[in-house]
Image (cartoon, rainbow, N blue to C red; front, top):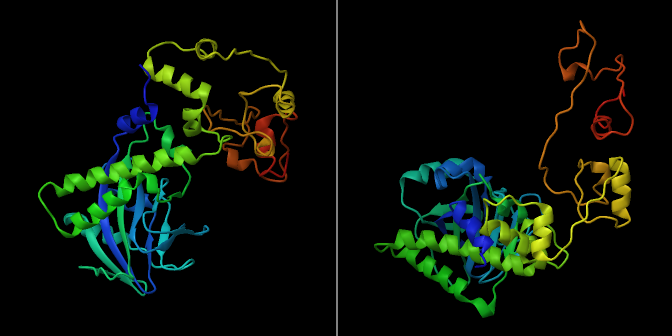
Length: 344
């Protein structure tokens, strides 16, 4: 039976959600969130990674990672910050407001979600107005594990803007229900709001996956690739099997041929000519313009050899102009070192 790999990963990383703020903004307003790692212990204790989302229930606003270009949000849109970046949500592009990390810890002893009225860049806790010209958002956090295996987060952008889809308007209805539940507490409401946050994230990832261009790369894009997706499914169906590249290729109908090269330089040149599809060699900044490197699967530490009795005791002692360093030409570690050492 075919497996839903994305659902498997979401289950294994213990996705947890909390709806935290019910925000109402009037006139000129801005709210700025600190990096999620600074407030993780207050909003979702015990989570290895925390991310924040905002759903626009009514009105419109702007959202941006601090220092990055903003995006316009309309009613029914959702914005998610998968990597926990500091960010701003505001009535106009370019506005800022002072973040308040201590405030999250002060609220820790109270029951979320918290009503927040933002007017002229000043946040006030308490009841909010439902004036038709106001902007209303529900804001929440999602926590998950990064270990032992969570390729999803690294595959997502720093800001995910999920526009309202009239064909799948249930998310807007859920957010409206969440806003109503935030104002009118009922037994069981906390559990419902937690599930709403989790469903919002899953829907956002699903929609994002559907918008990826055909030439996208990475684990998430691989899920929908005809061959890569099938290979991932096979491994998830039988994780104890001793898979090899050759066996996976045979099962999915893609023959695998291994080609050896005498040096990384020759391999890189062959890649530019289209002689291979996947290669294993050191990631170097000078080659990143022509080759798309994945995250490192292995790190090799490079160090120095010194004569017996040498006064040099640390790598930091080698970056002096009076010291001559000998090296083999055109090897990766020395090309990397040459960018920060003047005596090679």
